[in-house]
Amino acid sequence: MDKPVKAMSGGMKRTLCVAVALLGQPDLVFLDEPSAGMDPIARRTVWNQILAAAKQGAAIVLTSHR
Image 1 (tube, rainbow, N blue to C red):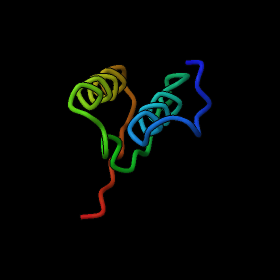
Image 2: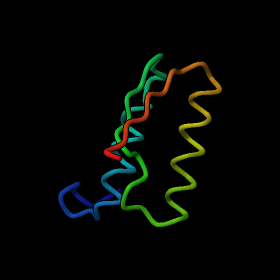
Image 3: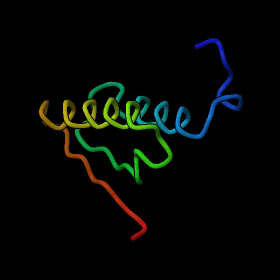
Image 4: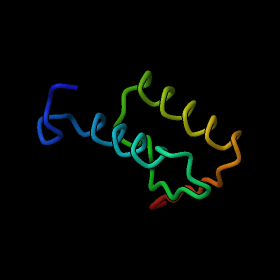
């Protein structure tokens, strides 16, 4: 929390981006590979938050480069 974003790892930056995207309980969220580059624990935490937002009625659009 005391680190500037530029000092964070790639996975931490992605976690922060997902958190910012879910702030304010939006109705629609577009996420581009939200868990890429994360360790398994962070990945599970992020997916739990995404699922919680979906259960509250948010439409989640996930994209991939595959």
